[in-house]
Amino acid sequence: MKERKIVELKLISTDKKYTFLAVPVNSNFVEKEKENLDTPLNEIQSVPEIISQDVPEIASQDAPEIDSQDVPEVSLQDAPERVTSEQEILKVEGLEVNYGVIRAIKGIDFHVNEGEIVTLIGANGAGKTTTMQSIVGLIPKAAGKVAFEGTDITKTPCHKIAHLGMTQVPEGRRIFQELTVYENLLMGAYSNKDKASIKADIEEIYVRFPRLAERKNQIAGTLSGGEQQMLAMGRALMGHPRLLMLDEPSMGLSPLLVDQVFEIIKDINKGGTTVLLVEQNAGKSLAISDRAYVLENGEIVLTGTGKELSESEMVRKAYLGG
Ligand code: ATP
Image 1 (cartoon, rainbow, N blue to C red):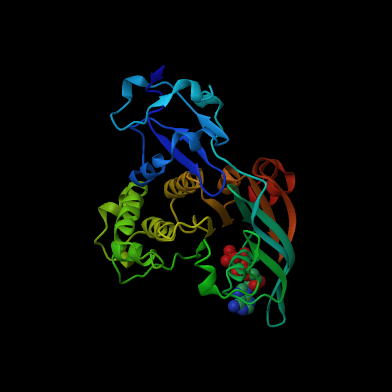
Image 2: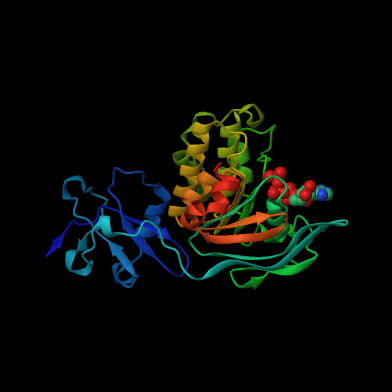
């Protein structure tokens, strides 16, 4: 018997592993993701998890018809919120960075698994920005190895790294101050030549950041700090990174905006983007992190899950105010 069971299927993890999450039609559904519904049903059946829920009263004409027998009975309550894997998307080994005689990074190892949010926490001057910038080739490495999706990128120049699928949102945002919000977003699509998909991507960004939609013709330099942060994140997302690296996204924002920015990061990650975060705001960042590393004077001194670190006495004393 056919019944209208899932109203829409939302792709929440890309690359080899697919997980489709049933979402009601009237939820925050991004138009572009509908393309993923073209996947033939037999392919959908082969994905590891399909999460279903009966919501016939809000089923729309557009909703795909799914034979209920084809769908494992899993309630949304049981559903994992996100998909992470043991597959390393980023691996950093023995990284050393010097500024002249200053040893800023003293041989650190860390990794980020696909689907995770991983945070490097540390005080001012601990070496967080240096780490991030050396990974993307903005600062030369004195020693060590960096691999992205299994490919050695230790010596890959910065402009090529941007095309590989990892994008950095630098500290201080660095948006194009004289351009409008819309033009800044266009700049984020530099590697995309397809006008229709750029347009769809921009619409998607406007759905995620309604404030940017309201201000699309405003000169970016006149935006508030929080809006500039959102624009910088939106611009980075225009390139569809598989790894988004954010350097202190909460810096200089009001507490309310800080909360909003962390919610948005969580949401971006739920959409399937892996996140490497660098933060001084240990409380907020550990709360959304799968794992984290504590960086002190260019060395990793502690690592664990976000929960473990937020409960660690050392972290509480040094970074959480007791
Ligand atoms: P912040 O939160 O203040 O940005 P951070 O953890 O990101 O701190 P880095 O900016 O990476 O730290 O700095 C790490 C160390 O390297 C610090 O001791 C800093 O003074 C030093 N440093 C950073 N940039 C330079 C530079 N261009 N020349 C010399 N030393 C530098």
